Length: 112
Figure 1 (tube, one colour):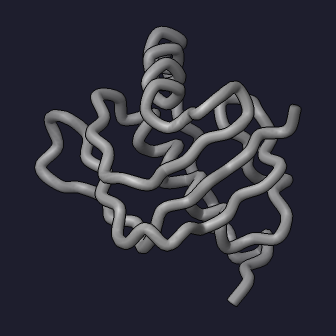
Figure 2 (figure 1 turned 135 degrees about the horizontal axis):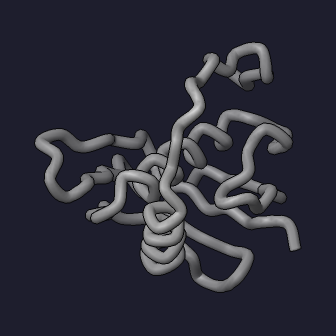
């Protein structure tokens, strides 16, 4: 089942400190980026920043769409996102008692 923009929930605006944003971007690059435009989530991940973890969760949502105009991470628009068959992926953020489980891994490419 493919989703449309109308299926997106309304999300409250988050206030993010620029130092937190920079730390989240650094961690995101370190954990999932293969090069400047290509990333992959194919294993369980342990995060230290909530922002990096939340961006990975949000990015997974793009696997249900055929268009990506509503998805931009750290200001970069997506070109393509593909689910991969890697099994359940768990995402945990240090200091939290719970973890997020994604049904599968995914691969993504930013626009150049």
